[in-house]
Length: 365
Image (tube, rainbow, N blue to C red; front, side, top):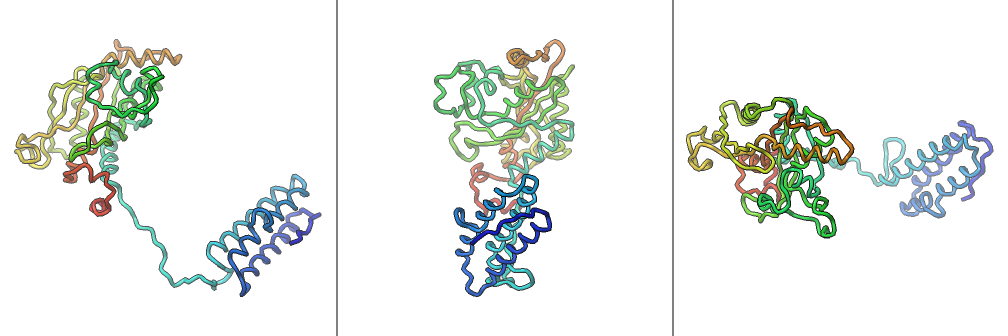
């Protein structure tokens, strides 16, 4: 193909030039002897294709002010040729060769939220309505954010309760910089306090990883929703009131809560929270082991050592240490989304949530 040269680069001249090319391409595909692959190579071939030749001929000789106009028309012609190729001869008008318009359309099936995603969104929604912001963070963390800043010093026995999946090849790094898969979403609490001064109200959903053997109630991958509230004059009563309201909002106004002393390295005092059994109303059944109560989450007042670790890190980053334990206090809590979803939907094996079995998942559509 010999590409004619242009001396007039006005819009009218360019419209006429590219209009003729458009018509030439259209007539080619109307031809009874049309071959799709030959047409593609003739127009879109990288070395000798007509569009390549047109681009080389016009853009080299065109003045700078005309190149944008040429580019617009060139791209429109190329897009039209690609559309024709995609539908095999789709022509102007109502008729098309090799296109059976009587075939049913390829409709998209409307999906549904996975029970884990749905449960996590519902929990987060409860706290958002109480004024909490949503915090997110990386799943691959450093030892500092996952353990050290949360009052898990090296060799602390509490680390044994979070059997960790570590990233290989980290032995040459300082311990605090070694990478691992986060065992809880608590590192986002530290990251948020490093970026923001109090007051802070945060709810943190996300996936976490532990080196647990898979069985009916355990998985090496699961999900958590944690929360953090830091301000002046925050007390344990605020924590109890917040969680009692959240449990009633999620499970129903008849649900009761009760707190038992517990231990977590990053809170002091710490507590386990139970709710009255949602299946039997607290009377006692097989699901609550006849106790009338179900243990659901852990919580506590933020340990001052955590605030001190945040202040020290802020100093290292050249920022003001604003978490003064003489003026501020806070509480934190965390719950397992998988366990709540299993309880809510009557699922007996956590593995079903990760199996990808459509027969199982379609029950929640």
